[in-house]
Image (cartoon, rainbow, N blue to C red; front, side, top):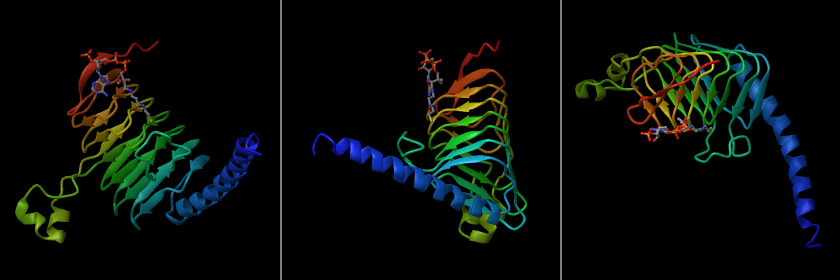
Length: 208
Ligand SMILES: CC(C)(COP(=O)(O)OP(=O)(O)OC[C@H]1O[C@@H](n2cnc3c(N)ncnc32)[C@H](O)[C@@H]1OP(=O)(O)O)[C@@H](O)C(=O)NCCC(=O)NCCS
């Protein structure tokens, strides 16, 4: 029995994973549809958190992959992907984009190009979430309307290392790479690797 236990365990796990993947797919489709998200083919592990406001816009291109649990994302610090789009804001994701445990919070605009790889635990914010003025922050309503928001643009073929945070107003040029655990406060040109906190230029990428 001891000899066969791993075989039985792995077989049952395979079946369970197959069934839950199908159920998660159905749940994900319902959530995306209910939020009015315009999307095509998706692959999902686990169920994301999606919140698109009445006057928010979310468009996702073809062949979108989302890892929302340990199976799809064995990277550590696992959580669900979060797609949050406020009233009047937009979140536009291109074709063939993959993300793991990623939070995308759009108060104005986040645009992600084609073939972008977004590592585990990445956060992309186009907002500071709070005013810089301590008086404003005492009042939720004033705090909210006095928060700085600036669009974020991620170019085609960008690779964002795990646990990085990209802040408001940043544009990342095509093909560029952001090292793991970076905090990106300034725009990054095309074909460069940047990393650290705050992210700095590391080296150029040679594109064939
Ligand atoms: C950025 C990265 C791609 C660079 O890889 P590389 O080309 O092999 O670069 P090296 O390891 O030779 O490092 C080059 C320099 O960048 C620095 N560096 C590398 N990664 C860095 C990071 N994340 N933050 C800050 N500096 C970094 C190195 O210390 C080195 O500095 P030095 O020249 O002063 O010695 C890689 O380090 C990285 O962060 N990969 C992301 C992994 C990841 O998160 N994957 C997603 C999982 S979901």
